[in-house]
Image (tube, rainbow, N blue to C red):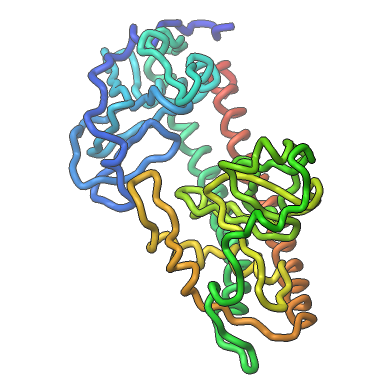
Length: 381
């Protein structure tokens, strides 16, 4: 229901769709002089501005996204640049807030099997309700003040989340990167195989084995558990073989950088097959497998590996030389290794608990914004 005295119009009635953005998404960088708006929820930066006037930028790909930009900027070719038609009748930032309140409606217009898109016609027909100009300005001022406070709280929660994640990284790096008296140091290639021989398989061709494609290898999960099975004959060729307690790690971008890694557990007949993009680690020495897992599952390790990737863009893989030559230090006593794993488990659990707390805080603040927007456009603010 439209509040008394308010009007209703389509987005195209009150805003001009100036043009689409001019740049490819790759134009956006992590640093730069100007804002770069992709068709995404977050903005980036660039060093060349195509637009100087205050604008609304609507994305047409991925997920519903809308940005209000009041400084010089550039935008991707999957965005529309909008400005108000009549400044004496419509306040542009009010329209932006109204679109944010309507974000679920905009999302419903996105369709497609791979990357989802929304049509220009659908965006133009997005309904906008508005009061007279002074009331629009009053609502915007109130929303600006409320959202500034919420954004400040959200920034604190996001920093706390980052600190929690860095807590575990710092602790694990102290164990695996700093020197320890009495520990042995060998290259990864000397302490583990990275490719296992199928000749050791004793099952028949019709026996069931575990099948684990890349999407089943998790991020932040120590173990790979899956109930998917196939006959050995179905997967023996064209897939990577692994066995119970092997460590699987993705070698292709972006899966490697994202930390897709896990220890294979509860495999059917003790045997598994999966993506050809797996590296399969199996110790050649007396080594606790979870100790090896924690060594490999570190941001420091992944960042260094990412710099040594080979191949074409989009298909880069961490190099064998990087893996084989990476120094691995460890105590020779397995019981000491297990004690360290217990310490890592405890810190990781603490980190996960904090992550859940701060992630929920951020989600709650986002929900609060939507609740305030709903009140604003029901005439209750």
